[in-house]
Length: 191
Ligand code: G4P
Image (cartoon, rainbow, N blue to C red; front, side, top):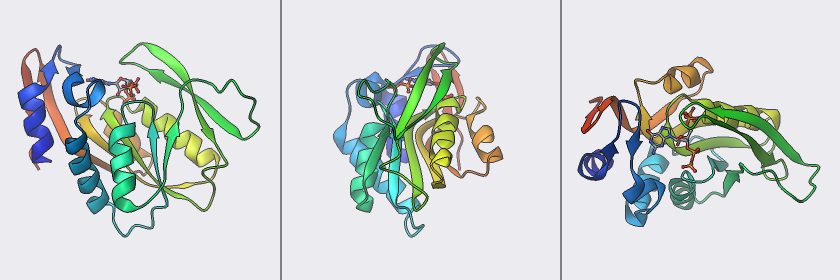
């Protein structure tokens, strides 16, 4: 998506050969009108696929997932990272290890909201090592939902996320695919 690539070039900050900061429009301050355009783009790509729910992982995926859900007229479900303090027997959970942040967390889903009748599109901000997305797939499959695909705003194509997901038979649709990152350098895969 040209608009997103231009924004990354103008305002993104490549702090190393691995990490791109986009705090000014995605991760901390959020550009709502950019998110609306992103939602339209993702919805157009996945239209007429029988999708019933949009799923995201808190927190930065929420804005683009909500805009996609609104555009497609579907509900959005947030996979939560903090365990619920209220006892809930319908909670499915899985552990996700983040290589980028060096942490691990419990990802949870209330199975009241997704079941075997659902065909789900996952929307998230970054695809790096694919661990968060793989955790989301595990959770969704544990409640017998089927997966329409995964859409991310920024794919770091030099990291193994895409190939990990494709190896599981999942379509990956990325709005910006970064082939190279270095201090002050961002290059995209041209498609
Ligand atoms: P993975 O999910 O693809 O395996 O990536 P990983 O576990 O390594 O990433 C964990 C967290 O780091 C995710 O955020 C992901 O969005 C974020 N991340 C990965 N690479 C980058 C990057 O280059 N720049 C930025 N800004 N973030 C990156 P999270 O823990 O889910 O946090 P949140 O922002 O969604 O709350």
